[in-house]
Length: 121
Image 1: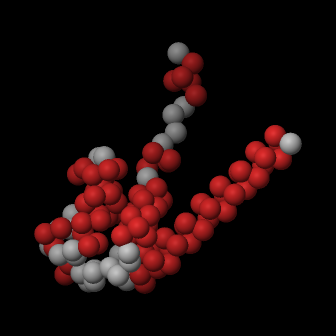
Image 2 (image 1 turned 135 degrees about the horizontal axis):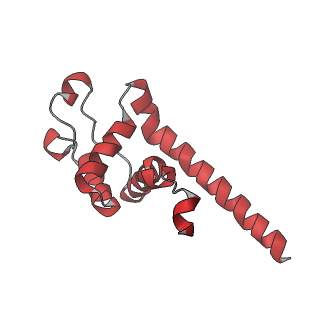
């Protein structure tokens, strides 16, 4: 019984993670891909400047609500090549969820792996 419950929970978690990735792809990354906007580069700039996911989240939300150069992390030259984002029409809850998913999608902590030898010493 417990084994079946654990398998079910893992399955539901996998499906939920997959559906949120699909939402992120549909609402955000599809336009970034079409316009060849470097999403990972943008996230890295936020990470280098703010380094805290809460601050990053708030800054991205501010830009999405009020997309002007002053609220962007990107330099002015960036907007010579890429268009300024239009104000989003997503409601606050969905927007917040999508920004969370964006941060989770590009989070570098998932890519960091410590060698097992370090932990043994």
